[in-house]
Length: 258
Image (cartoon, rainbow, N blue to C red; front, side, top):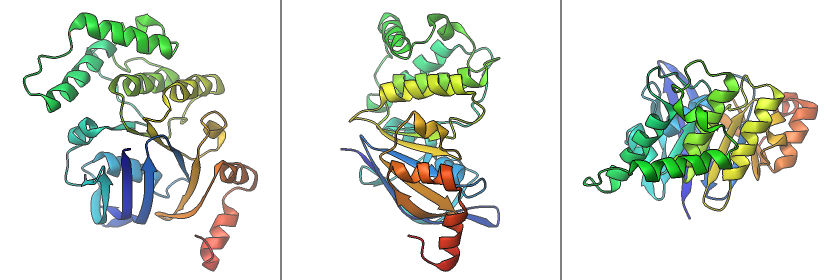
């Protein structure tokens, strides 16, 4: 069973320390949610796990299947089985969704066998159609330029389609609910729930509880001031929805947080 293990992770950007000692374990088959007010380091955690060059690791380690990945490039982490769904996916005019997905699959295949000539087009098209049908997506979506002119919901669905095609072992969803109306949120959540299972571990990073009404987490963690200060089950997210974060701040101030 694959596991992403984060130990005492401290991260800064410029001269500002953002993550101040984060520890977390995510296994295949588990869904973890990291919640917290804006500016607490949630997206910094996501980008650091995927290897964004703007973030400097000051201390700690991140191990995936026993390998410290902090010295690896983002594409190497991806090929190992880690996936990041962006909060703000970038548009790539001129590159269709289908071409992007086939290029990504071939990069993964060649990392395992440099002599691999790539997935045959008929095999790829069959597989892509199956994934799109599973996610209840219009087949015409594959012929559009990636995220170019997409609505917020379409961009997030494209991210979930990438996850379905690449079949990672650990997926990080960075505020996937950001900018979505309730209908789009339900559609995206249904896609994630279709893919979740014993072979996929998921880290859902969110500010609001509403996405957790549809993607039920096994574990919920609260981040404040660059640290995880409270952890619990799905009921913790409901408590945060009802009570806000003030009670957590009070526990942190009094030194009684976890």
